[in-house]
Image 1 (cartoon, helix red, strand yellow):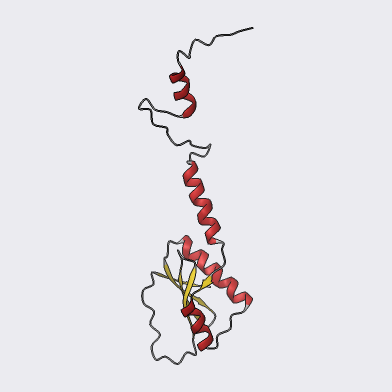
Image 2 (cartoon, rainbow, N blue to C red):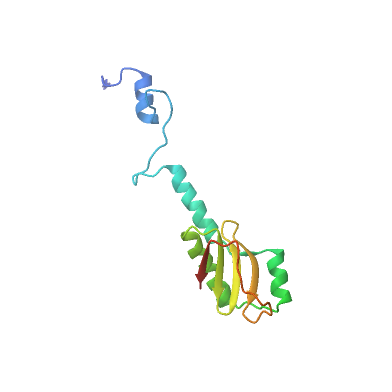
Length: 137
């Protein structure tokens, strides 16, 4: 039993309907049921995956931890990671994250601790520059 659908007169009309082409011939990004394009969903998934990566410590930060005899407990490291996530959610790029008596400067986009210090540090001045936000974790 052959049925003919007269609403499709050419391959171009079917192609435009099923491939998301406009009359200009350009393929439009496909949108899922929530109204988001695939690329925006992929970007969010990659951002979430990066956000959940453990922090890296730069050579400078590692040297400061060693020089200042700073030991970080598992709990403090978890809170530091949580502070990094909170800073990223707020759009902070360079964050001061305070954990107990420890202070860390974290580059959020690179997921890297840049430097570290404790309250007992002998420096006269406790000035933090080049940060755009702070988190108390």
